[in-house]
Image 1: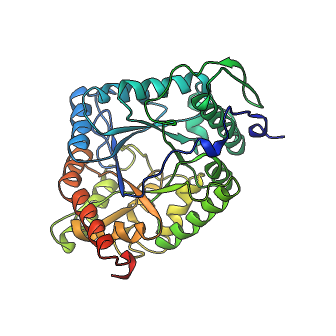
Image 2: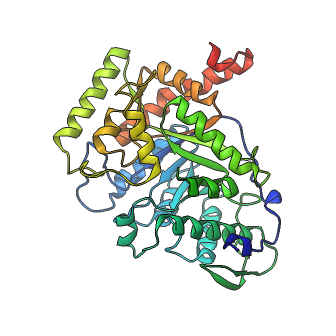
Length: 388
């Protein structure tokens, strides 16, 4: 019997489903200081002025959420979220969270506390961890399959506590709990949304069981069709095939003309090569082991421009150690590329730039409103997006 077989939620998972919107959703990413592949981090780990400016740029720019990442050398994401929540008005906080470093009972209270403090703006992005070296820095020595088994049990406990109306008991492989309190509730009902990342077979099995939004990095349209079908197949085993939404991550590179946008992309690539080894992702000195990175490298093997607006040279150059595929073009061209992926079932786009603050401002000013307007127009005319 697996760990999750031993979990006894107070209510069935079908009653725990978070209502899903089909409108397009945009998520940005905030950093506690200026840093990216072309901006090596410097100074203190937290630059308060930069952090607040970045959060407010996303808030004022119309982003739905801001991702707050998890790094073994970075500030605590929940505390960052609480701080920026106090300096923004409407934008949501999507906090990356690695199971295994905090008890699921305390995580359940932490995230519901954040939801209370921000009036219903919290969400969790569950990432089991694809880098053994980085996991070891925080004392985690489980292999990948064991990490996903632990994640399955961990998220089951979170959902049990969030759904409970009385203390929760649990007996599993990784956790034994007696009388966990559900008293700290979320503002959002029935619970906060669960985003989930990971592209291995083990990850997809967990995603099918638990994810409200399954997140993948920017890939070719063929790759997206394939993984969307696989996640839905896994979700169908739990009666959830219609409950999972899909998120795709890109690094939009914009300019007033297509020619200028491609020239800008090449300048970013050249800059990355100049500072290789100093920037956030580090040098390309070993093949990545996580399935998400391997999928990006598969796309890059098709060429720097495998289709349409997709640009994979930066992913290849960095060894795909993160979300590094770009969409290149004018704001309208990139917006139309988003809608091509939307036609494949993608309703969420996680976007950030190589100049993070400046690009967030530009996205909010042009790219987001244009994409939403084009989608509304096409839906109003009842014209299939992919056919135009």
